[in-house]
Length: 268
Image (tube, one colour):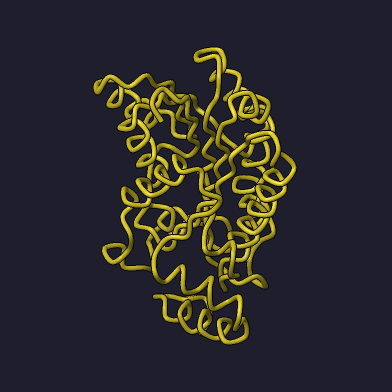
């Protein structure tokens, strides 16, 4: 990834922040974006101190004009785009019959439409560079997770979108990677939305037992270098995807039982 111009959305924390440092270590030139301008600038300052060429751009990916502006600023500074990592995302925890539809709409606007907007405006430049289009999805994009309606829906939609883009451009040298971490230690659950759109505030999982965001980022960066089609992380995630292909009914029950054991689970 030496000197490859790499755009990372949702780069102010979690997997996105870890990806910024992983790609920087491999020599990439970075464009990092997020809604939190202060955190973004702090990360950019730290990266710059290590000699990294980095451009921070405040971006709300749910807003189309913000995504267009992100791509335009990347081109204005670097003149090309080699990698786009669609990482920005939010989660939720609520049963479908209790969830406010605006909450599901908010998840789709960020997780799915954010990927649509950024990918649409970056695609001409990625085709020029025969670059990489990456979506940070989830095991929830393979198996619907109860209590995560909007999250699973948005990740299923993201994966369908990227698969189509891959097929449409299979003769043009475009690399498309769908990366699916399992449960990762990050702040996504702390800021997950409840049924009414308020912040959940506290993670329902033991974060110390989850794969660190830094390890996830290293594996994603390696998958980009190898131009892999897909990446499924954690043994639990791999087993879930595999068994669901052959025993979907059994996996429905297993997933239900697993998610019901969460503290303050919305169902039992």
